[in-house]
Length: 114
Image (cartoon, rainbow, N blue to C red; front, side, top):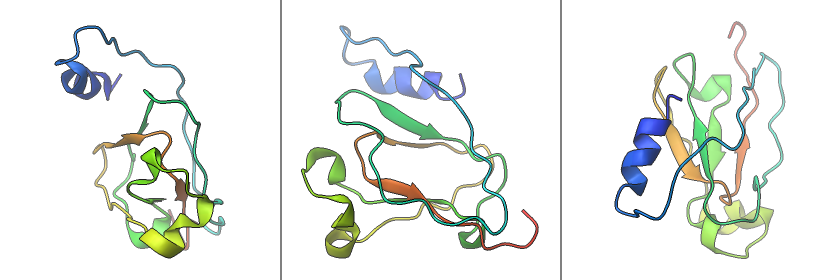
């Protein structure tokens, strides 16, 4: 429900569209974890991933990396070699929203204590 006001505002200009939460969950990225493989969460248009960190992120705690622009392309998961990736460093409570067709991965947690 944290993201619903933001998503509703984005969809406001499209009166025929309604937003709802299709699924939710959480991830605990413990120290020593490995990076996920690059992946898409699905192939269908119209879904948004929302990440809300419960701690301030740093490179060492393994933030989510995305490959911008891959939501509209048929490129494979090795697209980061061509396009490069983007790693938003969010503060606790900030939102990261992206099309769920975007290629992304959670990075490994190299920290000692978080």
